[in-house]
Amino acid sequence: MVYADLHVHTTNSDGQLELDEVPAAAREAGVSVVAITDHDRISPALDAPVTERDGVTLLHGIELRVDAGDQRVDLLGYGVRETHALTGLVEHIQQDRIERGQAIIDCVEDRLDVSLGIEGREGLGRPHIARAVADHPDADYDYAATFDHLIGDDCPCYVARDVPTFERGREALLDACGLVSLAHPLRYPDPGAALELCAHLPAVERYYHYGREVDTTPVERAVREYDLLVTGGSDAHDYDLGLAGLSADQYEPVAAAVE
Image (cartoon, rainbow, N blue to C red; front, top):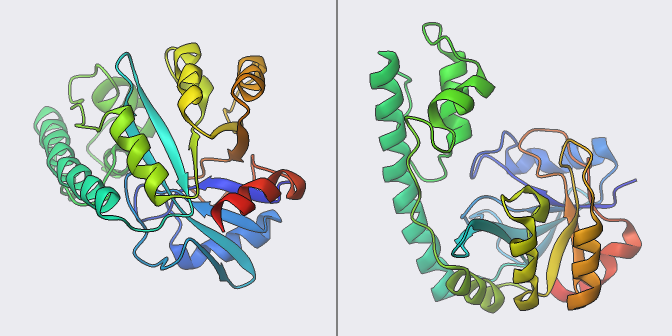
């Protein structure tokens, strides 16, 4: 049983859950602690690093995309306290997201000769665009095909994001958060290089819902080599929480770091 799901997205970025719906979804999954880790955004409705809503503990978190040189990776910050550095970084990223999102929408609409009825805005991500395409009666693409053929990496309507360097993102998160973790290390093109970044981080996402069988030996090796705390989460973008995460005992050192 998962006690703490430390990787959940809401409508503040590209999730389907409203923040107010999180406690009920958590209780349905038997989860007691949820980290709200929206992409490149601080949650405006969470005014403390740790809060309680309807009997469920909520961690104020963030998932930040950074450029590690050879590839881009995601960092999870837990126990967010707003700082000038993090706020400025997030504002810059969100402006880029607006412009990038509109460029992708314009390309898709032109290519398919349709109007999707959405526009670039803060928090907009490619999943929003893929859902709009899949829901359009004149677009012959479902959600997966939209990514595979239109907006996925190296596809005709893909537009790269402007993201901070690993060093800049890491420093901003370490200053603002109680704990920083490398997200889903086995999802990257070069997991080995991603795990080497853990030499400069206090934690790694050991438990993650990859949706397939994976060999977690490299992650376990990194935990030992760099003396890392472990985090875990489902990376939920819908209502299904608790697909991965931490037990109550595993959560204790995380709680100590963020409170």
